[in-house]
Length: 352
Image (cartoon, rainbow, N blue to C red; front, side, top):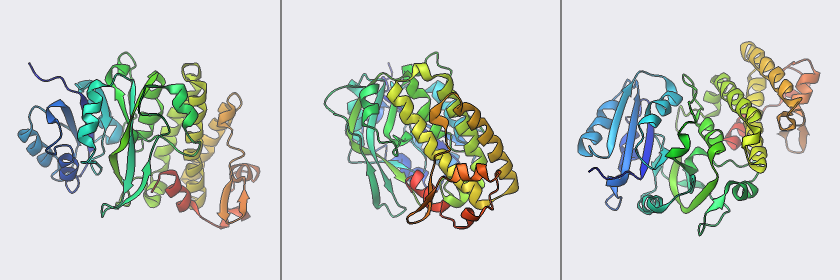
């Protein structure tokens, strides 16, 4: 009989020939119990050697690596293609330009073999293209015992998010849930952070750095220039998440709900700042429509009230920029918008 799989690792991959070998090698070290892994590389219609590289690894590890070749549909479509086929007790996403830490990954897999919690958290770090660690993100809960979602939520800081890098979900929480990520756009990893967690009650914590998140790569979706170009995609993602939170409030722990809304507020702040900074007429119209929708939500949900959001364009110069924009009849050329620091806001929001 085939070995029961402990961890399914979904790797969305589009034109990742430069990074995919390092990504996969980080999962296949000599101390890793590879037989416990279900690695699913989803080739999202790549036009380079991504598929060839993925299949070469699958040929070497046929019991642990599978490849799904599909037409391009962007990030969410990769998760949607792989998740129903996952065989591991736990499911984790690994971007193809990222990697797992070889010094801790073997112990992490073994930790998961005895875990029973709905969600297993791990530390993660941001690294630059030279491999230098910039920041390490840790959780303030005990690794010695299982924790409730309420206990976790009480430890989370308003300005910090857990990130998709620090979590593995128990696969059975998706049973009957009909979880489906938005397709055709980027940034849907945020959906993975905010939506499945509604099914989580118990949490375990592996308190070592497992995930190494690459920052500073050219063309990365969180790069301020790329973000400004794709910001309408982020509006679509945020509308879906905020709508889900709003309509499922009773199913969330109250403290977690407030925390998740605070994360969305921070992300929405980057949306407003980016569009107002670049003043693209088409984007402004989309932002006005989004803003009207948000104001309707905020009539019943105070967490969606963005009117008190402040922006610091210069040290000691802060103002409630969304309220200011609304009061100036959605005019992005009003006097206080002449000093720009949007790229700093985006970098801070996405830990880059």
